[in-house]
Image (cartoon, rainbow, N blue to C red; front, side):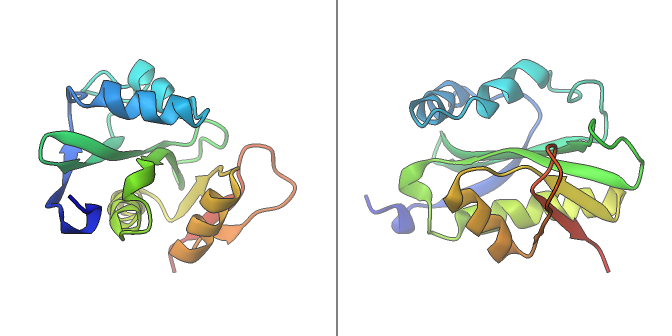
Length: 151
């Protein structure tokens, strides 16, 4: 079935779904380790002790095809800052609008809590994605490549 024809649902994740292992494997094949770190740090109630963190996923049937989180920013722990992280969309689901929908949900959650959002993107396609979503590039920082400030 063509990915665009699939029925997709964004859902807030409170416990890692069974499909997490498959999504984690897909990320590992692309040498992305951050999805595994999400699994290590998320206990269903909080992300590394952050009760305000949220994790969202996209399901196609019962298959998890994308995931992302918004958390406190441990690199800049001001209450005015949140971080978008562990954002991954399965390769066959990219360029369908799914990533943008997931990103907007995470941004909405994070902006309810803080006006300034940070993230770190390194692959060129990821950098271009966050540029297109509206984040501004940050130079001279090791802990972030992008920032979005609520007006």
